[in-house]
Image (cartoon, rainbow, N blue to C red):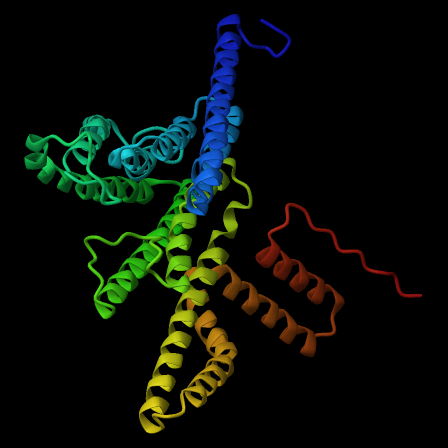
Length: 389
């Protein structure tokens, strides 16, 4: 054994793992430099922003791998980062398939320890792996034209008849989510908290995507834009919609961040507070926007010639209802998602009521200890009372 207490075989295995991680990090960094240089030359800021996806995945994957070399989830993150880099470099339409497939299947199947929920899922795991090159080939060679409207040099006519197999993509995604639900139902408290972090990040991405997709379709319909020929981040979209589409792209960063937090267990149990704040601000934002639209519509119909009056009235209405609405919604949401905060408030309130009527030092100290233990859950607690003169 060496100084670290490892056998030669284990020591060489750990050394090979670290070298592999650094090789993957180096390759992704070189790819990022090439993509950034291409973005500068083409004056396309979208490519530069897209770099955040592979860089975040490779950073979290590398960190977790160096901390827990046997965690297969970390290696999947590194594979996703490499796939994203390939998608940004490769001139094929199907470059996005491997990264998306790994993120929506293998990450869910093997979260948080890199192991499958049970041996019964092994065949399904292999199926998703086999589908990655198959679906990539179908997307890359099944269309006569590329996403930018140019002719596809890899087009094969017979492949277009097999595009019906793309229906397997949402099927395996849903099945992978079901595997995570199965794991959650049989998991211990710690693993449940880890799964909730991943579920929160995935929910934010899905909700943002659905809202942005529906908004883009509405804009195409309202302005008579051919949705089949338009694509996200196109110059024809207004600034606010382009920013919303950009938020969807950046939201994917939440997934590796949540995985890193849950696996490394950094501030793990604050997920309840995070979920409650996300739900609260999401609901309040939707209600405020709805109120703004209603006020603008009503005033525009009553006073058709005064658009500035409608805008001012809607803005004042939104500002007036934001704070009261946020407090009301926060209370309702906390009772469902952040019960610890409600219980802590009730405990502190009960202790404050005891202080109003009790003068016995012993009973007050006992109540203080009970309140602190229920709210802060310290490992040790000591009360120092000054002796009376």
